[in-house]
Structures are given as structure tokens and as C-alpha cells.
Length: 483
Length: 111
Image 1 (spheres, chains in turn orange, yellow):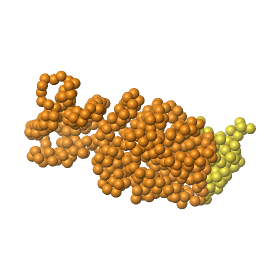
Image 2 (cartoon, one colour):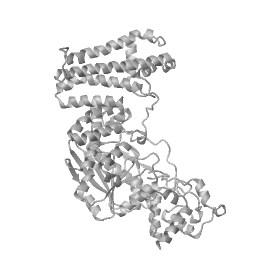
Image 3 (cartoon, one colour):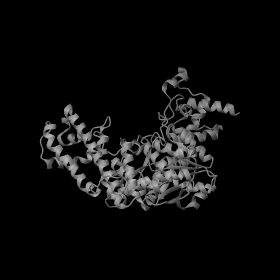
Image 4 (cartoon, one colour):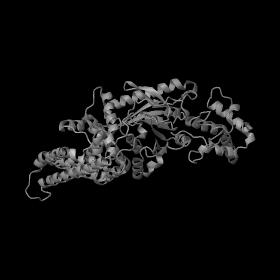
């Protein structure tokens, strides 16, 4: 069901994008209708609550649904609405194709008339018809006047799109299922590599819209972050741009991995800083963040093929994406140091990489659920940052270089290197003070680079959320698992 | 990174005779000294570390950063390098006894 909706939406939007704006306008009613049909249809899947049942629960009370007749009515009416919307979408789509000479139909009304007059009228008629028949079809529900009923429906609308029982509280980032799924990623990769980056980039628009509607917590987090960063409430347009920027960098990872930096315009600053550290030959910890594209640092490997690069990552967090990227470039799989599993294995793998003189990429902004953190001021409020990067670097006496790759639209990336520490050294006796200083320095630089373009911020969750449980007091208050 | 879990209690019991529960062998004592000095554990004496008690997450509360520092101290002191890819680290780091046995074994093969 979802795949069909996806394909239909994508096909229509690609058509709209490729042809003139008039064509796009003609396709719009079909797209909207299909989208609404899909909103109904998806709630009919097993284990989900039909949309009409959610509406009845919101307007008349969930108690009504205990009646099997009411539940059946709700399911059937949801199905009817889905079919009705899909049918209208089909007619609107056929008329749009007809208008462009792609489909021979008898001379009927023009698509503009159907899409913008008859289609909305048909939906309104169906709604009024449903309301008029309600006293007979749903005698259990209390009577309401049409305007009260419609008003209650409009107010309840956002919550109808959410499966009942799902929490509204911002979840920890690691609890959020990967967005898009395998199918979407496969689609992006196939279209991207076969048809090229411009065609794949056209798909980013429907993907952005899809993400915007489907991923409510992420959308809220985006708006909250942009409002905080910009100092004024963020508009929907800015949120859409934020999501689009994110989708664009994910797409570009496909190209960066499959074809390296060919075709990209990558500007690097601070290269001398990282080269000076590489020259020492004892390994370098490259500390990045979930902003822009860390992948853009491959620009380094292009000019120095002998350079060893390792990435510390959590393969379990985005399994579909990781699998896709590894399939594109099997060498990347070997470069990864997985943090899932035994903590000792991963720190020892980092040790081995350092002894080989490798560049070890690590993202220092997100903390896992049970990871030890320190609070640092970040965009005007304290946020928790992991301390493991500094302790690992200190144990291995590594230099730490910040590395942020910002996406600047088109095919342009700006990569910044900046030395954080020539050689990290944190004596145990001084841990508390020094960890506070290093996390604050990192947070301040991260804020600086994020402010260059806040739409590059890709932590789509409440980054400032306070941990639920207090940190256990273990020795010098470093919690049980540090990495 | 994930917490280092201690080995299941059953496995420890099976490998340790009941009578030897709380006495360190000389080799274990040497290693315990190394742990206390290299990790700078405050208020801990080497003799206090029970040979079969969990090193990580348990009373001693070591973490994966400690595992890293300990591996560096062990390779410096004994010339034994703990591997990152053998998948055995959960067992090796389970207790003072397991770790000491692992070091003795690899020291022997190295010589």
C-alpha cells in the first residue's frame, strides 16, 4: 500500500518537476487527492486504527468504538474514503495527461475545472452526505450540528494522523526508527546512479514533503532547533528547506561513496592543520558531528590515496542506510569500527587504528542512552555531550582535529578542519575540570560552524532534552560505560 | 559504545574452585597492582580485588575507557597485546583471574 502511494506520488512529482509549471499545476489536485487517499488507506493496515475510528474517538469519545458495529462502520467508511480519493485522483490524473496530449479522452471539462472546482466539490459532497446519513448509520453517536462536527474534526486533525497510543514526548534519538526504509533508499540509489544526480535530486522534493508529513517528531525538532538558532520562530518553509538539505546530503553520500568527490565542488579550509598532525604519523582523531556531510572529508583521501581512514560508527542505528552505503563501496565496511557489541572490542580497534597512524573519524555530538556525558553551553542552553572522544584521545595521546563538512547547495561543500588539541592529555586527577573544558570547547566550535548554516544541523530530536535518570555516581562520576 | 557486561556468574563459578574464592595468586596480585596503579583507583588496594569478581560494571566499576588504558598498560608491562578482533574480550576482561590467566598463557607462547 505504502509502496504504491510512494510510487504514485513520486511519478507525479517527477512529471510536475520535469514539465512546465502549468503541467505541475494540473497534476496538483491528483497528487493531493492521492495523498489524502493514502492517509486513509494506510490506517487500514493490520494493527492500525482506521482513520474514521480515530475521528470517532476524538469527536465522540473512544468508548463508542467498543461497539463492534461502530468499529465496522469506521473501517468501512475509511475504506470508502480511500477508494473515493484514489478514484478522484485517477480522474484528475487522467485529465491532466489528457490536457498535455498524452492520453486521448473525449472532449470533456478541462483539468483545471475538474481539479479545482469539481474535485473539491465532490469531496465536500461526500462529507456532507456522510454527515447527513450519520444518524442512521451511526445511531450510537451523539447528534451534532454540521459546523460543530466539522470544527471538532479540524481541531482533531493533526492527532488523527498519529496512531493512537503513540507517545508525543520527544524520544531519544536512538529510539527513532530509521526514516524512509529500505525501499526508499534503494529507489534513491538506483535512480541516482542510473539517471544521475539531477534526476535523483528532483526526487528530493516529494521525499521532503513525505518526511515533513510522516515524521512529526522530527518536524517538530527541526522547527524548535531552527527557531532557537535563528532567534525567531521558524516558518514551515524553513523547516522544509532543513529537511531538503538533510535529504540532499544523504543522497550525496551515495555519490561520494560510489564515485568519490568527482563532480563535487569541495572547498577545504584548515587542510594545513590536519596535514601537520598527519605528518607526526601517530594517528589523528577527527572529531565531527551530525551536521552537513562528514563523508565530504573523503576529499582528504582523494589527494592522498595511501592515507588510512577509519570511521567509528553505530551500524545498528541506521541498518538500511549502512547496508546500502557498504554495498556501494565495500571498502567502507572495512573502514568502519562498530560501536555496537562489546565496548572493549571497539576501543581496542580504535587503539589498533591509532597505532597504524590512521585518521579516525568519530562524531562527538550524540550520546547513546547509557553513555557518560558532560553538560556544555550550546545555543544558549546546556546540552549533554559525550566525553568518550576526549578520554580515548587522551589514553592514546592523539591529536584531535575538528572536522565539519557543510552542504552549501548545488554541488558545493565546505569542509573545515580545526585543531582542537595538539595532543590530548587529561590526567585522571584533573578529569572533572578538563572534561568540562573540552566538551565546552567542542560545543562552542560546533555552534560556530552550525551557525554558518543552521539547515545543516541533522540531529532531528530534542538535543537539549535532559536525561531521565541521574548519572550513577561511579568513582570520579564517570558512569559505568563511557564509550 | 555498549557497556562491557560481566560474564555470567555460572561461567565464573565453574572455572573457580570454591576454596580459592578470595585469595590471589602471585600472578594475579601483580596484575591487580598494575590495575590499581595504571587506572589510579582511589582508595583501592590491589589485595582488595577479588580474583573472580567482575572487573567491569561490578563493584570495581571499570568502563571501556579503562579497558583501553588497561590494555596499554598490559602491553607495556607484559608485552602481551590484547586483540580487538578475537571476540573473546568479554571473557578475558570478566575477572582478575581470567585476565591474569590470559596474560600468563600469551606470555608463555611469546617466549
